[in-house]
Amino acid sequence: MKKLVFLTGAGISAESGITTFRDSGGLWEQYRVEDVASIQGYYRDPELVINFYNERRRQLKEVQPNDAHRLVAALEKYYDCCVVTQNVDNLHERAGSTHIIHLHGELTKATSTSNPNDPRQIVTLKDDQDIQMGEKAADGSQLRPFIVWFGEAVPMIEPAAEEVSKADIVVVIGTSLNVYPAAGLLSYAQQDAEIYLIDPSPNNVPGYLPVHIIAKKATEGMKELYQQLTRS
Ligand code: APR
Image 1: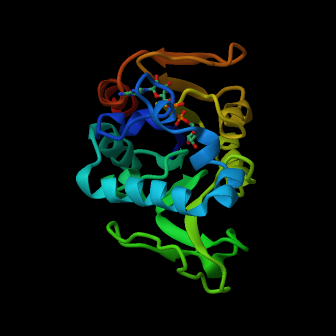
Image 2: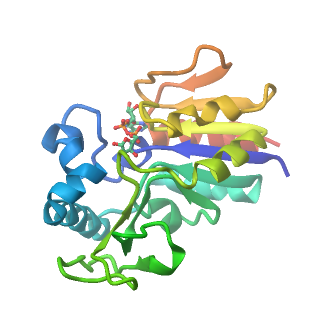
């Protein structure tokens, strides 16, 4: 089976009703990134940050995977797939994808403030379960969202780069390619890999790569690409 690696961002969840970050009306127009998505912001006001992610976790109950998530999962029948996502929602899982790398963490998990990447500290929360101030992780420090914030290392970037370096096909869906190291993953693609990018307003597409751009929304673009990739 050929290897197919997806690199997805907030745009793939837009049609499920989850706002992106940098489109007009996006999350970073409503909140300051440095206040709610940086390690400095967390230490400055942990309660503000914990509640920001409690709100985003609660939203998971109101949204469903869309056709783009479902078509990504359906391609597992034809390819050895891996989904590398910057998204912290669980829509790829709920659509049926079975090999997912979350570069920026997961809303449905919580961890320790002192040792956030120690696997023994990571717990799974129910969709409607809030993290409370004063709630402790196994090591006795404040329980915090299992999210990779600006200013923190991205522990899953190496396994993700490994996947991209072995891909026959790379499909980028719904990311502005603004945030590193995630945005740099395309540079690990093999010379002869086929690269597709689905985004209604593509930007930051690396000029040195032969990228097939499908300037459409994720659901429409994935319908088109699914036909192309499964044509016998
Ligand atoms: N279908 C496909 N793409 C879409 C759609 C859609 N329906 N709607 C918007 N897009 C595209 C936008 O054109 C844009 O290129 O999705 C992209 C969203 O970009 P961002 O909002 O920057 O989201 P993302 O690239 O995932 O952000 C990366 O930044 O703030 C951090 O940690 C956060 O993981 C996030 C990272």
